[in-house]
Image (cartoon, rainbow, N blue to C red; front, side, top):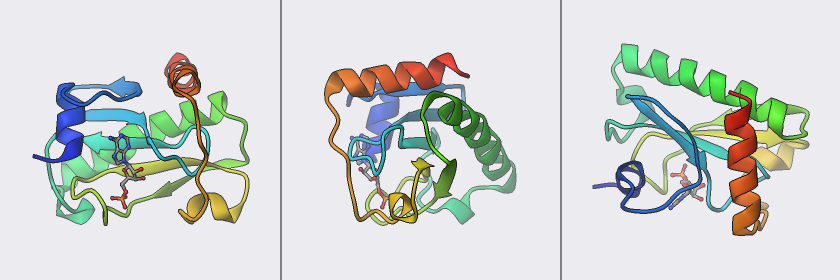
Length: 128
Ligand code: AMP
């Protein structure tokens, strides 16, 4: 069982942004930038392009809605999207508020307090 499956089930806590029957969106715990969000299909599939085409399209559509809300909630130039998966073998879309190229390069991290995570998750959810 992946760590994200445990997050979706509530076994491991997360700063939830949104959820529907197929997807779960929450803040990355080690963010590149304030507002860095992960969107995960509840079905535990390892690789993005192994998703069936319908679920893949729905994941992108759900991620688009979340990205639009992040852009309203977090000051940034635009929202970057990245899919990596080298650390957690459960499909997840990274949505990252960008000010500069380095924000999407996973080389610089920001430290946030629990209250800041909570406030950002709420601000994004309030813009959905
Ligand atoms: P990757 O698999 O390379 O796309 O990276 C996995 C991402 O998941 C990293 O950005 C981690 O910070 C993030 N991550 C790992 N564990 C958790 C967790 N418990 N809650 C939130 N984000 C996590």
